[in-house]
Length: 324
Image 1 (cartoon, helix red, strand yellow):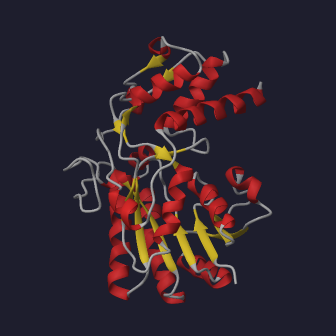
Image 2: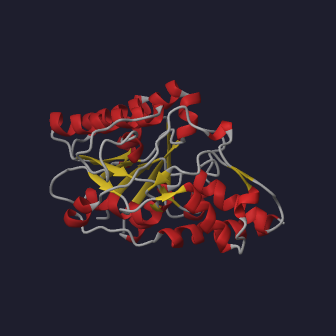
């Protein structure tokens, strides 16, 4: 019989890539979506005849248990969260509810319904925050610098706690920044690719950004979902850093994006250090050591940084052309 997987956060960036990957492996895929009169399914519209959606609410323990009883999954991928770091300062309590406590609700539902379900928790490099060593690996101390990062640390450790307390197969993937054309427009990488596309087409003349010197380890989301799956196929549950092992500044991302559309004097279009885009506490330099994932999972990134930027800019150019 085909394996079954339930994905929370399936309408976000990672969900569609993971669903496509699991479908290619012969899985029956279910997506857990909020109870809304008109749910936002833009990112999964192309999958509507291939996956099944289950309504529920991550703030409602009963609806989570109901979804597990209805779908009877072999694997649960908990990708749902309030994941925009900037918004976590404006909505710290809501971020805690969705990004931290909902992990406990998910784990408790699995414990009560079927402890044989394998559980994946989406942890984040933002947990490292003000880094205490470079590069960051699984044993690096967490020092989060945002309500989002703090909530992710809670979600990470409650996953470890359920694994050790109840002998559940529960793992955390500590994923460094991973982007794609499906990334929300509010995220800096997509904001850059979209703005550059619009500027190249004469639809805009400026790009507002915060700190151009912040460095991140950026990979392609489509590569990273394979690592999620591999973690749940192991004999023993464990946590893994998933990254590229190299980092680049926001400035490099901007320069390369403009270069793709033939613009070299990009500085005249960019308004840097805009107050509304500066964080109360900055995370300056993240870079991951994925050697454990390479050695134990056989995983490594396939898409280079220049390929990622080009993919995003070209996708946004095509999207903008359709609206002209």
